[in-house]
Image (cartoon, rainbow, N blue to C red; front, side):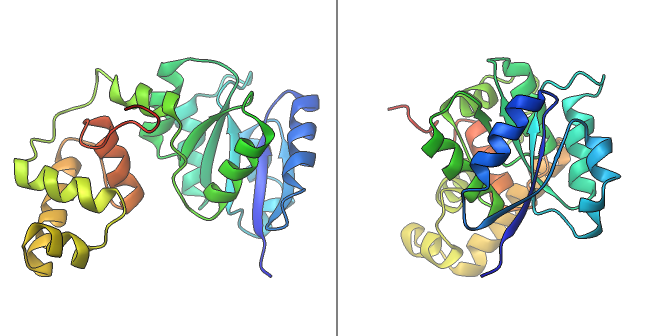
Length: 217
């Protein structure tokens, strides 16, 4: 069975080692590095073989920024799951804009943490209520100007439906649905909010209130 290569970046050594030991209990996960900075990881031997997922503490004491750290890790080909011990919505928004798969509190129950890491390592979005609320309340997001029909298509597609199912539910052809999705992506790109993947579209839909925040009625 292939295993996901995971690295942890956290400058609290005891915390980092504790979480590394915890994640090592997941059969699908191989913890290949526990380091204190992004630079240390990128310069380490762990990078001789690409890392699938980096678990990144949002508050590092090396003077780095969330955006810069996420950008460097993604440029190296790694997906990023952000870890936080606080409630700073600004940090969560910065991480989300950078393209992380999700933000998870360090105080979550063990089962929640393990589930989040497993899903993120497999490339899935991990959307917590706090993270979604931070996205929804972001005052700096530019309006993409989607039409009502584009919002309807996005709400179905971003929630997990494939193009044929969206077409069936909306009474459209599959090619028309694909064209709507292309136009939605183009509009988000024009306002500086790229949506190249389905996970990105899901995030944009949460940000704009097109999809409900998980855990809220």
